[in-house]
Length: 276
Image (cartoon, rainbow, N blue to C red):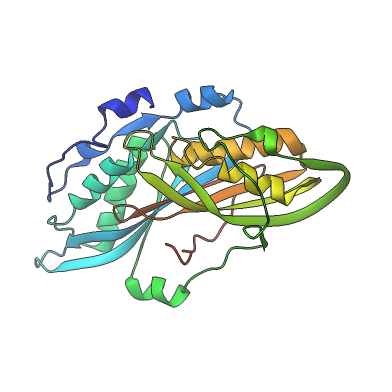
């Protein structure tokens, strides 16, 4: 377990507070998990963003009439802190009985509070249900590797030794899998996700990638650290010209978390998948 997470509201009974309470937000420093991966804030080998989508965003107009919307939050991957997910939900619930003069006033409030918790500017977008509905469900790019025949017997830790490459071939391709699963390091509850790997470099054996991803099945870690581990293991194996790894996780408590890590800048559409 991350040492800071022991003091978070995750896994504990919590009072439902329905009026604005920014102190509910619980930041967790990224440095401890980065140290496990052998990187520091000064040596991060990626650029990226964590997209959070909130499907239970509601507040009051000055008249007292409630509004519902969908919130999108983009937290920089180099921010000093992640925001613990249950505290994030509790904070958003504290808006439910809080009046705001306008949607812009709410957005400004969210930017201020979330940026303070993350330690870097957080981008916020509030979207109507109609706007999100018209976008529809997005497919993942590239080739799905889930039907490949693999044998896996160890699910307790990620196994980068399963990964294989063909150094005689340099290719550019996109692969994806819906079989990513890990567990919350605090509650032990399952986290389900779909993962995309885009790269140009030595050819990666797709079956070995699938077996490696399945080896996360009983691994306990936060969403962001799982994606960072996958990114680093592939980077070390392939020494690629370009690498992007991202995961789209199934929502829990009205929030989904979608970490993106890349050798270059990330300019991605934040589109929901069929399981989101």
